[in-house]
Image (cartoon, rainbow, N blue to C red; front, side, top):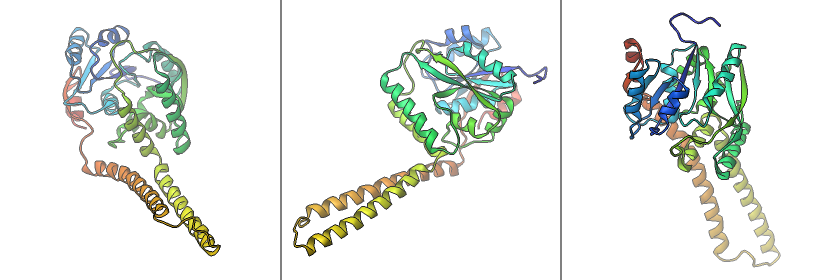
Length: 314
Protein backbone atom coordinates (compact mmCIF):
# COMPACT_ATOMS: atom_id res chain seq x y z
CA UNK A 1 0.00 0.00 0.00
CA UNK A 2 1.70 3.16 -1.18
CA UNK A 3 0.82 6.48 0.44
CA UNK A 4 0.79 9.70 -1.63
CA UNK A 5 3.16 12.33 -0.16
CA UNK A 6 0.27 14.71 0.61
CA UNK A 7 -1.86 12.12 2.44
CA UNK A 8 -1.18 10.81 5.97
CA UNK A 9 -0.96 7.07 6.49
CA UNK A 10 -3.48 6.99 9.35
CA UNK A 11 -6.26 9.26 10.57
CA UNK A 12 -7.78 8.54 13.98
CA UNK A 13 -11.33 9.80 14.54
CA UNK A 14 -12.90 10.25 17.99
CA UNK A 15 -16.48 11.53 18.51
CA UNK A 16 -16.77 13.77 21.58
CA UNK A 17 -19.81 14.70 23.66
CA UNK A 18 -19.19 16.40 27.02
CA UNK A 19 -15.76 14.85 27.58
CA UNK A 20 -13.81 17.77 29.10
CA UNK A 21 -12.37 15.51 31.81
CA UNK A 22 -10.83 13.15 29.25
CA UNK A 23 -9.57 15.24 26.35
CA UNK A 24 -6.10 16.06 27.72
CA UNK A 25 -5.40 12.38 28.45
CA UNK A 26 -6.75 11.43 25.03
CA UNK A 27 -4.38 13.95 23.43
CA UNK A 28 -1.46 12.59 25.45
CA UNK A 29 -2.03 9.14 23.96
CA UNK A 30 -3.28 10.09 20.48
CA UNK A 31 -3.22 12.78 17.79
CA UNK A 32 -6.74 12.67 16.42
CA UNK A 33 -9.55 14.20 14.40
CA UNK A 34 -11.98 15.25 17.14
CA UNK A 35 -15.68 15.48 16.26
CA UNK A 36 -17.52 17.72 18.72
CA UNK A 37 -21.08 16.40 18.78
CA UNK A 38 -22.71 19.50 20.27
CA UNK A 39 -20.97 19.31 23.67
CA UNK A 40 -22.36 21.60 26.37
CA UNK A 41 -19.27 21.63 28.63
CA UNK A 42 -15.75 22.98 27.91
CA UNK A 43 -14.95 20.24 25.38
CA UNK A 44 -14.90 22.54 22.33
CA UNK A 45 -12.77 25.13 24.15
CA UNK A 46 -10.23 22.44 25.05
CA UNK A 47 -10.24 21.13 21.47
CA UNK A 48 -9.43 24.62 20.18
CA UNK A 49 -6.54 24.86 22.64
CA UNK A 50 -5.20 21.47 21.57
CA UNK A 51 -5.41 22.42 17.89
CA UNK A 52 -3.67 25.75 18.53
CA UNK A 53 -0.83 23.94 20.31
CA UNK A 54 -0.56 21.05 17.81
CA UNK A 55 -1.72 21.34 14.20
CA UNK A 56 -1.94 17.55 13.96
CA UNK A 57 -5.10 17.76 16.08
CA UNK A 58 -8.05 18.47 13.77
CA UNK A 59 -11.44 19.62 15.04
CA UNK A 60 -14.89 19.37 13.49
CA UNK A 61 -17.64 20.93 15.59
CA UNK A 62 -21.33 20.32 14.86
CA UNK A 63 -23.86 23.15 14.98
CA UNK A 64 -25.81 20.99 17.47
CA UNK A 65 -25.87 17.43 18.78
CA UNK A 66 -26.51 15.00 15.91
CA UNK A 67 -25.62 11.74 17.66
CA UNK A 68 -22.69 9.35 18.03
CA UNK A 69 -23.12 7.47 14.75
CA UNK A 70 -23.43 10.68 12.74
CA UNK A 71 -20.29 12.01 14.46
CA UNK A 72 -18.44 8.90 13.31
CA UNK A 73 -19.75 9.52 9.81
CA UNK A 74 -18.45 13.09 9.85
CA UNK A 75 -15.07 11.85 11.00
CA UNK A 76 -14.92 9.45 8.07
CA UNK A 77 -15.96 12.28 5.73
CA UNK A 78 -13.19 14.58 6.93
CA UNK A 79 -10.41 12.02 7.54
CA UNK A 80 -7.69 12.18 4.91
CA UNK A 81 -5.55 9.17 5.84
CA UNK A 82 -4.95 6.07 3.74
CA UNK A 83 -6.43 4.23 6.72
CA UNK A 84 -9.04 5.58 9.15
CA UNK A 85 -9.46 4.34 12.71
CA UNK A 86 -12.65 5.01 14.71
CA UNK A 87 -12.28 5.10 18.49
CA UNK A 88 -14.41 6.46 21.33
CA UNK A 89 -13.02 9.38 23.32
CA UNK A 90 -13.69 7.75 26.73
CA UNK A 91 -10.49 5.64 26.49
CA UNK A 92 -12.32 2.38 27.20
CA UNK A 93 -10.79 1.23 23.95
CA UNK A 94 -7.01 1.46 24.58
CA UNK A 95 -5.34 3.57 21.84
CA UNK A 96 -2.36 1.19 21.97
CA UNK A 97 -4.51 -1.47 20.26
CA UNK A 98 -4.45 0.71 17.12
CA UNK A 99 -0.92 -0.59 16.46
CA UNK A 100 -2.33 -4.13 16.24
CA UNK A 101 -5.10 -2.97 13.90
CA UNK A 102 -2.56 -1.14 11.75
CA UNK A 103 -0.37 -4.25 11.53
CA UNK A 104 -3.32 -6.24 10.14
CA UNK A 105 -3.99 -3.45 7.63
CA UNK A 106 -0.40 -3.68 6.43
CA UNK A 107 -0.97 -7.41 5.92
CA UNK A 108 -3.67 -6.53 3.38
CA UNK A 109 -6.90 -6.52 5.41
CA UNK A 110 -9.23 -3.60 4.67
CA UNK A 111 -11.57 -3.69 7.69
CA UNK A 112 -10.06 -4.66 11.02
CA UNK A 113 -12.55 -4.64 13.90
CA UNK A 114 -11.58 -4.86 17.56
CA UNK A 115 -13.23 -7.77 19.39
CA UNK A 116 -13.89 -7.32 23.12
CA UNK A 117 -12.60 -10.43 24.88
CA UNK A 118 -13.02 -8.79 28.32
CA UNK A 119 -14.97 -5.75 29.55
CA UNK A 120 -13.93 -3.89 32.70
CA UNK A 121 -15.98 -1.42 34.70
CA UNK A 122 -19.39 -2.41 33.31
CA UNK A 123 -22.43 -3.69 35.18
CA UNK A 124 -23.69 -7.23 34.71
CA UNK A 125 -26.83 -5.78 33.10
CA UNK A 126 -24.81 -3.85 30.49
CA UNK A 127 -22.67 -6.89 29.71
CA UNK A 128 -25.66 -9.22 29.49
CA UNK A 129 -27.72 -6.94 27.23
CA UNK A 130 -24.72 -6.22 24.99
CA UNK A 131 -23.94 -9.89 24.49
CA UNK A 132 -27.64 -10.68 23.90
CA UNK A 133 -27.94 -7.88 21.33
CA UNK A 134 -24.91 -8.98 19.32
CA UNK A 135 -26.12 -12.57 19.21
CA UNK A 136 -29.66 -11.62 18.22
CA UNK A 137 -28.58 -9.28 15.43
CA UNK A 138 -26.08 -11.86 14.21
CA UNK A 139 -28.90 -14.39 13.74
CA UNK A 140 -31.61 -12.18 12.25
CA UNK A 141 -29.61 -10.16 9.71
CA UNK A 142 -28.41 -11.19 6.28
CA UNK A 143 -24.85 -9.99 6.95
CA UNK A 144 -22.46 -11.52 9.47
CA UNK A 145 -21.95 -8.66 11.93
CA UNK A 146 -19.13 -9.83 14.23
CA UNK A 147 -20.19 -10.49 17.81
CA UNK A 148 -18.78 -8.49 20.76
CA UNK A 149 -17.50 -5.66 18.59
CA UNK A 150 -18.18 -1.94 18.82
CA UNK A 151 -17.29 0.94 16.53
CA UNK A 152 -13.59 0.61 17.37
CA UNK A 153 -12.13 -0.44 14.02
CA UNK A 154 -9.65 0.50 11.32
CA UNK A 155 -10.76 0.84 7.70
CA UNK A 156 -8.88 1.22 4.46
CA UNK A 157 -9.56 4.35 2.42
CA UNK A 158 -11.48 2.31 -0.17
CA UNK A 159 -13.90 1.22 2.55
CA UNK A 160 -14.28 4.79 3.80
CA UNK A 161 -15.04 6.02 0.29
CA UNK A 162 -17.71 3.33 -0.05
CA UNK A 163 -19.26 4.37 3.28
CA UNK A 164 -19.36 8.00 2.14
CA UNK A 165 -21.90 7.01 -0.51
CA UNK A 166 -24.28 5.61 2.14
CA UNK A 167 -26.22 8.55 3.61
CA UNK A 168 -29.16 6.93 5.41
CA UNK A 169 -30.32 8.83 8.50
CA UNK A 170 -30.62 5.97 11.01
CA UNK A 171 -27.04 4.75 10.98
CA UNK A 172 -25.51 1.58 12.35
CA UNK A 173 -21.88 2.01 11.32
CA UNK A 174 -20.61 -1.33 12.62
CA UNK A 175 -23.13 -3.04 10.34
CA UNK A 176 -22.50 -0.72 7.39
CA UNK A 177 -18.75 -1.35 7.48
CA UNK A 178 -19.45 -5.09 7.22
CA UNK A 179 -22.10 -4.68 4.50
CA UNK A 180 -19.66 -2.98 2.09
CA UNK A 181 -17.55 -6.13 2.03
CA UNK A 182 -13.78 -6.10 1.38
CA UNK A 183 -11.25 -8.23 3.25
CA UNK A 184 -12.06 -8.23 6.98
CA UNK A 185 -10.63 -9.67 10.18
CA UNK A 186 -10.73 -9.10 13.94
CA UNK A 187 -8.23 -8.37 16.70
CA UNK A 188 -9.04 -9.36 20.28
CA UNK A 189 -8.39 -6.92 23.12
CA UNK A 190 -9.31 -6.21 26.73
CA UNK A 191 -11.69 -3.27 27.09
CA UNK A 192 -10.80 -0.95 29.96
CA UNK A 193 -13.02 0.96 32.34
CA UNK A 194 -14.01 4.51 31.45
CA UNK A 195 -11.14 6.95 32.20
CA UNK A 196 -13.43 9.66 33.62
CA UNK A 197 -16.92 11.08 33.32
CA UNK A 198 -20.21 9.29 32.78
CA UNK A 199 -21.47 6.99 30.05
CA UNK A 200 -23.21 8.72 27.16
CA UNK A 201 -25.29 5.61 26.42
CA UNK A 202 -28.05 5.23 29.05
CA UNK A 203 -30.71 2.55 28.62
CA UNK A 204 -32.96 4.74 26.44
CA UNK A 205 -30.16 5.42 23.93
CA UNK A 206 -29.09 1.79 23.99
CA UNK A 207 -32.61 0.68 23.05
CA UNK A 208 -32.81 3.23 20.21
CA UNK A 209 -29.39 2.16 18.95
CA UNK A 210 -30.43 -1.50 19.01
CA UNK A 211 -33.64 -0.66 17.15
CA UNK A 212 -31.69 1.27 14.50
CA UNK A 213 -29.32 -1.66 14.04
CA UNK A 214 -32.11 -4.22 13.68
CA UNK A 215 -34.34 -2.18 11.37
CA UNK A 216 -31.37 -1.13 9.20
CA UNK A 217 -30.32 -4.67 8.38
CA UNK A 218 -33.28 -6.96 9.01
CA UNK A 219 -36.95 -7.42 8.09
CA UNK A 220 -37.35 -9.87 10.97
CA UNK A 221 -39.64 -7.58 13.06
CA UNK A 222 -42.05 -7.35 10.11
CA UNK A 223 -41.86 -11.09 9.61
CA UNK A 224 -42.44 -11.58 13.34
CA UNK A 225 -45.65 -9.54 13.12
CA UNK A 226 -46.81 -11.85 10.33
CA UNK A 227 -45.95 -14.96 12.37
CA UNK A 228 -47.85 -13.60 15.38
CA UNK A 229 -50.84 -12.87 13.13
CA UNK A 230 -50.89 -16.42 11.79
CA UNK A 231 -50.52 -17.81 15.32
CA UNK A 232 -53.42 -15.65 16.56
CA UNK A 233 -55.58 -16.76 13.61
CA UNK A 234 -54.74 -20.42 14.29
CA UNK A 235 -55.60 -19.96 17.95
CA UNK A 236 -58.92 -18.37 16.99
CA UNK A 237 -59.79 -21.29 14.67
CA UNK A 238 -58.83 -23.74 17.41
CA UNK A 239 -60.98 -21.82 19.89
CA UNK A 240 -63.97 -21.95 17.54
CA UNK A 241 -63.61 -25.71 17.09
CA UNK A 242 -63.31 -26.27 20.85
CA UNK A 243 -66.35 -24.07 21.51
CA UNK A 244 -68.47 -25.95 18.94
CA UNK A 245 -67.47 -29.31 20.38
CA UNK A 246 -68.23 -28.18 23.95
CA UNK A 247 -71.61 -26.78 22.92
CA UNK A 248 -72.52 -30.02 21.13
CA UNK A 249 -71.61 -32.02 24.22
CA UNK A 250 -73.72 -29.76 26.45
CA UNK A 251 -70.83 -28.03 28.27
CA UNK A 252 -71.26 -24.41 29.42
CA UNK A 253 -67.53 -23.72 29.99
CA UNK A 254 -67.26 -20.80 27.56
CA UNK A 255 -70.50 -18.98 28.29
CA UNK A 256 -70.45 -15.34 29.35
CA UNK A 257 -68.53 -12.25 28.27
CA UNK A 258 -65.19 -13.00 29.94
CA UNK A 259 -63.93 -15.31 27.19
CA UNK A 260 -65.06 -12.85 24.49
CA UNK A 261 -63.32 -9.97 26.25
CA UNK A 262 -60.05 -11.92 26.57
CA UNK A 263 -60.14 -12.86 22.87
CA UNK A 264 -60.82 -9.26 21.79
CA UNK A 265 -58.03 -7.90 24.00
CA UNK A 266 -55.59 -10.50 22.70
CA UNK A 267 -56.35 -9.78 19.04
CA UNK A 268 -56.30 -6.03 19.68
CA UNK A 269 -52.87 -6.34 21.28
CA UNK A 270 -51.55 -8.33 18.31
CA UNK A 271 -52.87 -5.70 15.90
CA UNK A 272 -51.35 -2.80 17.83
CA UNK A 273 -47.96 -4.54 18.02
CA UNK A 274 -48.06 -5.15 14.27
CA UNK A 275 -49.04 -1.55 13.53
CA UNK A 276 -46.25 -0.32 15.81
CA UNK A 277 -43.64 -2.41 14.00
CA UNK A 278 -44.85 -1.17 10.61
CA UNK A 279 -44.82 2.38 11.99
CA UNK A 280 -41.15 2.09 12.93
CA UNK A 281 -40.22 1.21 9.35
CA UNK A 282 -42.52 3.88 7.91
CA UNK A 283 -40.96 6.49 10.20
CA UNK A 284 -37.53 5.63 8.85
CA UNK A 285 -38.81 5.91 5.27
CA UNK A 286 -40.24 9.34 6.14
CA UNK A 287 -36.87 10.49 7.51
CA UNK A 288 -35.12 9.41 4.32
CA UNK A 289 -37.67 11.08 2.04
CA UNK A 290 -37.20 14.47 3.74
CA UNK A 291 -33.65 14.53 2.37
CA UNK A 292 -32.16 16.63 5.17
CA UNK A 293 -28.36 16.60 5.62
CA UNK A 294 -26.89 14.18 8.11
CA UNK A 295 -25.16 16.97 9.99
CA UNK A 296 -24.26 20.66 9.88
CA UNK A 297 -20.76 21.78 10.80
CA UNK A 298 -20.44 25.00 12.76
CA UNK A 299 -16.63 25.07 12.82
CA UNK A 300 -13.75 23.08 11.35
CA UNK A 301 -10.13 23.57 12.39
CA UNK A 302 -7.08 22.19 10.59
CA UNK A 303 -8.66 21.41 7.22
CA UNK A 304 -8.14 23.01 3.86
CA UNK A 305 -10.78 25.56 2.83
CA UNK A 306 -12.10 23.50 -0.08
CA UNK A 307 -12.60 20.51 2.23
CA UNK A 308 -14.61 22.68 4.64
CA UNK A 309 -16.82 23.94 1.81
CA UNK A 310 -17.39 20.44 0.46
CA UNK A 311 -18.52 18.75 3.66
CA UNK A 312 -19.80 21.56 5.88
CA UNK A 313 -23.34 20.33 5.26
CA UNK A 314 -23.74 16.59 4.59
